[in-house]
Length: 323
Image 1 (cartoon, rainbow, N blue to C red):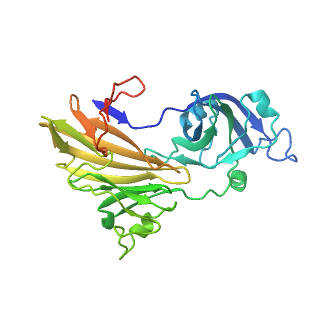
Image 2: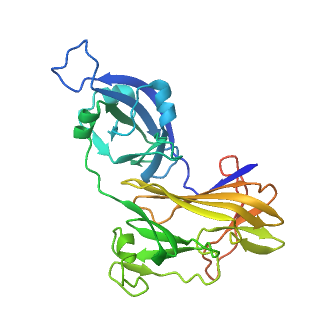
Image 3: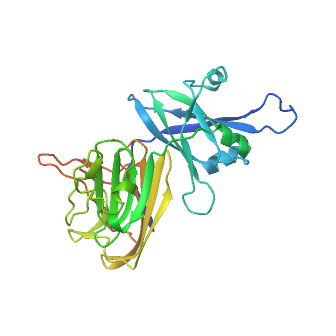
């Protein structure tokens, strides 16, 4: 049996509107194959709150159902304030959105396209995804700055990942706890933190390690509750790590634990963390095989005086939350 939990922001909504073709050159013959084709998507904010830099993920498989020749690696994502196709057709000015295509399962094929978009309350925006001739798309695509990064080094005792706002690491040993670096100045600092002789515990105008974990789970690590006691992912037959993706939009890292001995059984566990550009927090998706009936828990920082709140599971978020 596989179980899955996810820590995430409220969902974005998008739907495929139509497929249209666009000639990249006015001198191109009308009967020749176009160098650039365009898919149109609608991204909607169903809430009464503004959503700045809303995270959007589009399945490449879904796009290929409409356009079998779709190429994700060189695509260009743009948008305007148009909310419907008719209005979009009259729009002359668009804004390019930094995007990245990610191969999530390591099979050499792209699975998802990720980008971020600003949405006003109840707003729908038409998004154009252009693709086609590789050389043409490479000339059209902007040069997006790096805004996420990941690094594995013994100096971190494991795997680190970051946006320009916050950096995290997980101890790749029996502790299996998640630590963090706070940042005073936005930037990507894992390479600096991991460099020889650099002491990331000391005060710095850029940032430093600000979290003392001790023997706790840290912030967002996974464990099991067995007989009223927390059992860390400590006794395992094998641990593996992988940097799945990093780029201008998000970083995705993954850890696999084979043969975790817990509660009189052996569990195969996969942890996948995703941090988006500009965000301090991260999403943690957990998949467990052989964990039927096992209660999985996580660690959160608790401040004095806070009252417990319990959030019951729903169809969209099948997890019991206690905070």
